[in-house]
Image 1 (cartoon, rainbow, N blue to C red):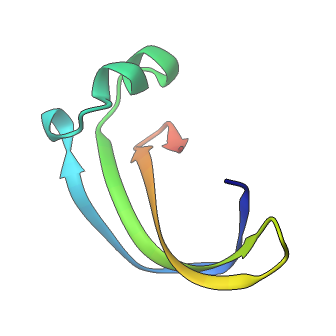
Image 2 (image 1 turned 60 degrees about the horizontal axis):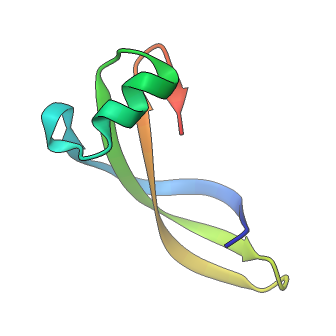
Length: 68
């Protein structure tokens, strides 16, 4: 599903890190070693049909590597 984040992500929270992340081998292979964390937050998103919705979004990030 295509969406675009409109505005800021609020209430960011880390809920998994290190070996607690199931996707850790894939992240390390694709982006390199790092202190990987899985995070979530609330954001306003624009869907492919143009409608705006509030949504909980999830992403991975590592210090020195960035967000994915």
